[in-house]
Length: 345
Ligand code: ATP
Ligand code: MG
Ligand code: FE
Image 1 (tube, rainbow, N blue to C red):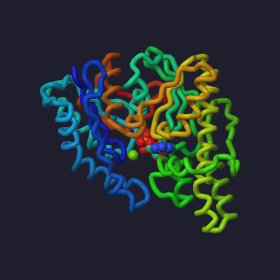
Image 2: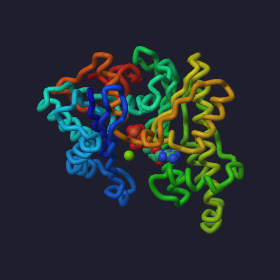
Image 3: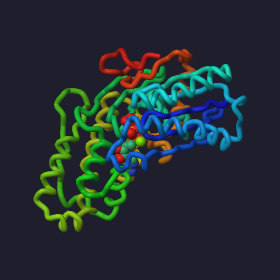
Image 4: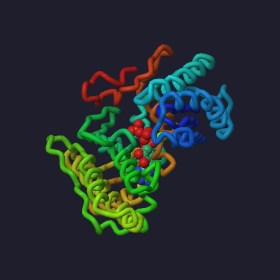
């Protein structure tokens, strides 16, 4: 039956309803961008307060849009971590209270499992045995996913996440926040070959990423230019900077596909909304005969449809969360954390 998903891990209060077959009936997102904008980043205490103010009416709106009532729900999925502790607690406590009141199962999922699940929302038949690249504001991780729901970490960023690289680059270029969509838009009017920024390789043996050298290269390049020149060349610089991030993501993702010996690649997370990344991935996948899974744009950045989708899958695998389950601000994935002991339910 219908499952409700709730997401409050960072600065989006989101709720969504999926029907029993995984079809999205509603997907409501309330962004707190206006709350945090003037601080240049997310302020945890303000995020928690905004979630408290919003979570109930966002959830009711999700139910209304799905044309369902509380009694129609058969399960609740909620983001248990990773994220801001106070923010996570708001969604988790709310979800627990609903699950208790309705007497239906609660399933806590990892925000990253949510991003991963987004690739299957519109494509339920996409292979489960595949490589997944999560490129988001806080993570750049490569996993080999298998049919049983297990994940093996193949590589990760050793410094900045790809989304962070976009956000910091945009700030340096005077484009504002959030940087990803702004660089994407500016780059459409620019030439990606004017300046060649570094495509770092990390010699760890794993398929790791590093974006801090790129950030520094942009900074040094900007120091050679006058403010007027920077403004004039903004589109070209955005295109060149974006190109470097995209090239590294594409290179590592396809290297992982080869190393894992699979024929399918899913790319998820906020950065998977990037138009240049989507174009280059599509081109390469076509050339190499690899099946490519890209979420619809509305499922790339944070949303609760992906949380409900991950919850639905977890329930199928027999996972339920006790009503005294804790928020897990630092969890990664059940079976893929570097230390192995995170993501417990
Ligand atoms: P995480 O999922 O790692 O916890 P998050 O939830 O904050 O972090 P997401 O919502 O998945 O991250 O993604 C947000 C990031 O995606 C931001 O860094 C943003 O700049 C980036 N992003 C969004 N749209 C685009 C785009 N079109 N091009 C590049 N980056 C983008
Ligand atoms: Mg956000
Ligand atoms: Fe996210």
